[in-house]
Image: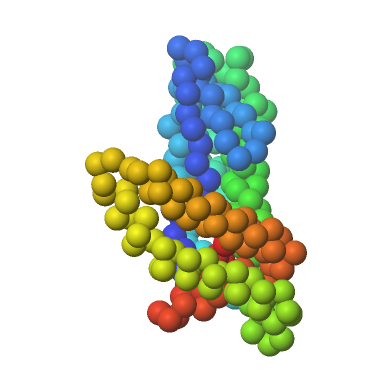
Length: 225
């Protein structure tokens, strides 16, 4: 499976001053400020870094592959950094932003790019762990359901039966322009029993997580309360 560079980091640019740009990375405490004069060089370098393709599922993580982008863009980095320094010198701005600072700017962009890859790895691993946990719980529920599963199912059936047998009568009452006292008692009784069964199911599910997983006729598996 190939993932394009659309998964790469996003820098949010805000004008910090008339001649400076501030780049913020929302997922981490990264902040990068540099003269707007060299913004084009920084943008071009970032575009190069995020222009790779990444293979998912062969054991390689995003972080390692994002580090590979640094090597892939090595030549461009050198040329763009030199171009930024040349333009600053030409405009008489090299004293405010010397070559050492320009080098630091490009290095920070690299670090942000690699950290973004690490962040994607963490997010991916979290999804895998959650998926595995669901699969394990599902296997346990299918293999040897504990007694509590049967009890929760009984409560669910009772609730369903209550809604099917009493629901039409209550709906007919709701359609009336006015309610009698008997109508009001029937509605109150229906709602009270529905709330009792729903509350009992909710409480039992806390002690019986295996009962969360049910297989529907259409083949979809989903947690249900």
